Image 1 (cartoon, each protein chain N blue to C red):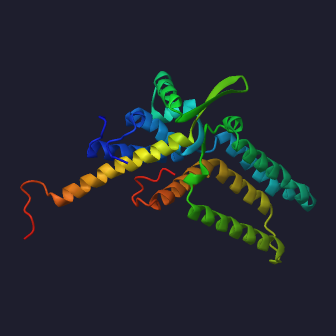
Image 2: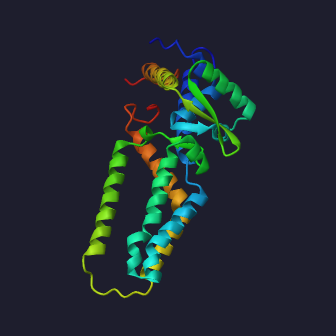
Image 3: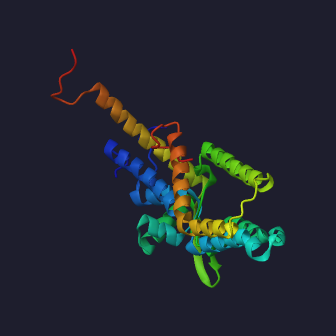
Length: 112
Length: 175
């Protein structure tokens, strides 16, 4: 995979945050994601809609007693996309480290 | 962030991914009322023979068993979890196999010690209301420290898992 081919959906930091939170759970209530991510309900709703339209998350609505609830979970496709995205990010960091190792910063004396 | 993140942006994004995963593990605990129910059930199971005689030992553990079974069943459904005050359910894959094995061994050892203490004659230990005291301490400890213990265990399990990812530093390993 070419490092340049980044998933535009996950390049957004807010969406990456939401997907990272959902990566550790089987499911989560919308309210929990909102509070944990520190987002407003409308902002999270917008991001969830985008992720859902790309099949990254699945949304289930229901009731507990008389209270409506929304549960969100990361789909297999979303999990694979996150793993791929993380691998690409790691590659960039690794390449940067290697470049820094072969080309020491200017002004730094090279060993004899 | 542009189409291709800079190394600084990539490193920041990786740190954020890990931080959010840790946050997930640390924010899933046990609701206070659930801890209170379990604390009372443990107290009743242990203290009942002191108050009502040893003949009640045959049924005194049943309420605790039934509550534990109901808890596990409810925890595995979205609505049940919501009723129990757990808005998110951690993935089993986030817990390292080594941690799960260690936890199993510790449970087995505790059970074995319990059986040995219960069935091997150990002289006359006539401490009045000993079971009541043990039940009260165990129940109270569960209510007070249960949530912190659960979160510490989650965190430990997650850290152990992250440390064992092929990437070493735990920067990756989304599984």
